[in-house]
Image (cartoon, rainbow, N blue to C red):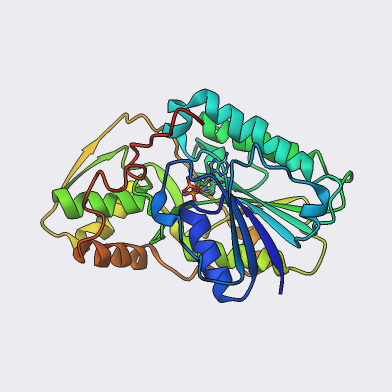
Length: 332
Ligand SMILES: NC(=O)c1ccc[n+]([C@@H]2O[C@H](COP(=O)([O-])OP(=O)(O)OC[C@H]3O[C@@H](n4cnc5c(N)ncnc54)[C@H](O)[C@@H]3O)[C@@H](O)[C@H]2O)c1
């Protein structure tokens, strides 16, 4: 069975990916430093024999070629994710998302690893005007430090084309939603459901702005398809990851939420701090991988709501890192 090295896999999407890939008998090694002290994940998967965990900052890890050669594939999730955290810890963000990840990518140069999958973001499109659907050739307009680093890393990886033996595939993920062992409630759908459930009201900024969404489990399925893809025509290609049926405005999301919370109060405001507004074209990922996400936004709302009703995720302090109130130990 394939051996996969997952860099930064103890986060929101990574833990879902690892959980599902272990069920499918892949052998997974994960390097992560629990940067948010997300202790709840410490012993996750520890009883599964196909899993090995290395608690380490990838900036300080010795990626020797002989070590890397043990793996068939490498998937890179790690880094500081999102606008608020990269703003709050700007120097650290440069150190991790730019300098650190470039050093990691350089370490693969002479390895025999077959495929590298780098997880990027549709946030790279930033603001796309006139309702145009952004395809992979669309001019990028990264508005945050977070997205600027992603664009920088994409270009860095692409500059390796023809100089290395491995294949590289870049996936620009839509905004994720759904349940994960490490929940994030700073992501729009997850946040909206939790907010209304707890406060019976929701403040929505710039309700007519568009964004694409995709469920965490569908992302796992896509990465698996990428890893197992046999032809060489995806080498050093970029793919938007999601589906057009899940492009939605915040207003459309609130309409869905009204079905579950008919008595909740929705307050619409303009000129929030997040200027992003983009609809995305997912033709390429569908064409190459027949990727057709199965889990709808409604399914995502229902599964989160179910756990909220069971009493989970109420305590703001318990998950100090996942409500946008991120904090990182200053020693890092
Ligand atoms: N969540 C989304 O909606 C979304 C959308 C588009 C793209 N993405 C991309 O998907 C990937 C995963 O995102 P996520 O939501 O799971 O984020 P996350 O913050 O939950 O996970 C990131 C992980 O990286 C680890 N990490 C950070 N710095 C590290 C370091 N120096 N050494 C080792 N580990 C380190 C963290 O401990 C964490 O486990 C990211 O690359 C992100 O840019 C996410």
